[in-house]
Image (tube, rainbow, N blue to C red; front, top):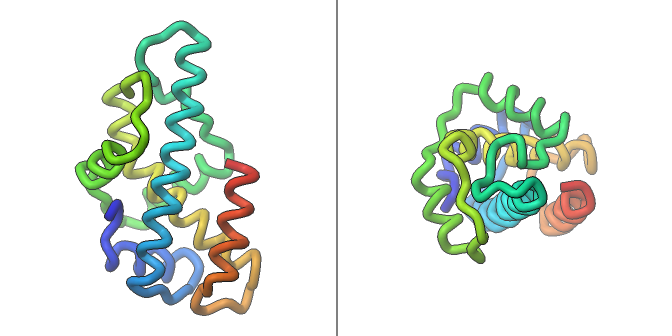
Length: 148
């Protein structure tokens, strides 16, 4: 798992006042893995287009909204460990290029930002939501797939 259950619960509670459980953690892990891989894949395309052999931070397609979520995550005082993130990435389809140390250092903040952005998306879908159900997950993931 890329993120622990207690960290996941805390992020969703602090960000969007949502209650989540272990079943949601599996969904979150799959979602975050996919979105993180997508960002790195697009970063790889940018690095290759600029004839570099390593993915740099500026290659990642970090939108303004995701950047704001990175700042919001940092302010929440929730620590995510890098090693589970790297272990998870190693299980995904490999990239042709490696990523820089600076990219590695930012991965926990990116994962945190994706997580809190997802929590906020649930509240946009249904402002009265307390516990996301399958239909909410499907809608949120569909939104992210169109935008990220």
